[in-house]
Length: 621
Image (cartoon, rainbow, N blue to C red):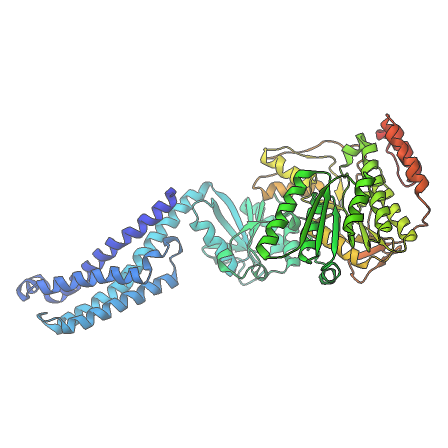
């Protein structure tokens, strides 16, 4: 048991003798105030003492039965005080009844009057004891908090009161409330919970400077997600840590109503895209589904969401055994816990091994294939372009070819925004993969093909969020390649929901694109993550510019071009305008020559000769 818990338990036990002594003293003094000390001695004192001791002992017993001693001092308020008053009154009524039936008590009339005095005193004093102790604890915490985090609470309402109380009564919170911020003009310039209320919220940047706040807690229970992102945007340029209380829509349990850090996707300043995939359930239920790259960030989430549709069989295919084993075991546990009978087939191999790919598709005859196997790290592929071609191009060709040969219903390729006018090997190979999908879509009589193109995925292996988080934990610096670099972002669940829904829309060779809103400046994202971790950018943790990496663009291409793209039934999903498709067999043979090349530049030149939109940057030649 830690020191804090020992202290709390000791305080509970101390209330027992304290309640006994206070009750005994007040009842006895009430009696003496009526009969006087000499009258007490003359009239006999044994019976009154027995009565007083009995009621004092009964007080402790009744309080224990009513769980009064389980009340935390730090939480003691009006409701708790009323419970103590009711319990005290109940005990005194029992005492009044006893007065009537205990023989030998002198001057019953005077004793009843003493009962009235003691009842009134006890109802006031016993709750007051606890309130005084709570006040002492709060003052002690307040003195401690002089060197604590200066905290500003947005929302001077019920949720704001919860946030303030949590900060004040929690010795480990190390928060000092320096003000509230609210849009209610009646509350502005008044005090709430003993602290000044500022406003409006739109002036929060100036209020932070005025109060020298180091942390901001967003505590408005009925806040919409849109308004939440708007407030987060107002805090963007301030050197503060951001926390928030859950919205009413996010919890039904008041015990969970505590402040937590703003999540990475909320720091993007947009509402997460929720895609309705109930039709996907109907499409995949009781079907055989294969996922290549099943152990990766996207592949493993694909597997999880596909599992929820209750297919008859899921085939996990990946070259990396460790992560594939992890997702396999996760599904095994889900199967066991839910008593499902979904068959899980886990196979190790590479998509560029055509014999292995054919062997699997021929044997298991999947109805749907989601092709997520790929090399995706831009700088690494600049130094190993032949391997990028082997996996991203030849691997895609193999899967697409055998999907057609063995009558797979649909194949969906996971692509990237870097395939748009690529300046790096990874983007060029993914653009090549898209042309393979479109070619087989024209050729196949059995299989419907499609590709899904989206931007950077938050939290995926190799993305900036895990990198920045690691750098912050190590004390910095946080490294950004260029101060002006921007990227489009989405969460892993968003990306996977998009892939699944686009598989539903796929009819033949479409490249689906998600409207991801506005791009995010990576430098600003780094600042927000540092604040979220409780540090001040440039003061506690530095951000340094390291220079663009090989093949890296300063600005990603705008994905949505509404003049040349078609909107689907889902207003957030577009289809890119198709280009003329030509046979690719000769190009596959041509690109295969790179496996005999030693020079990186020669591999890039050959790739550029096939993918006309691939532009090799001068510094990468």
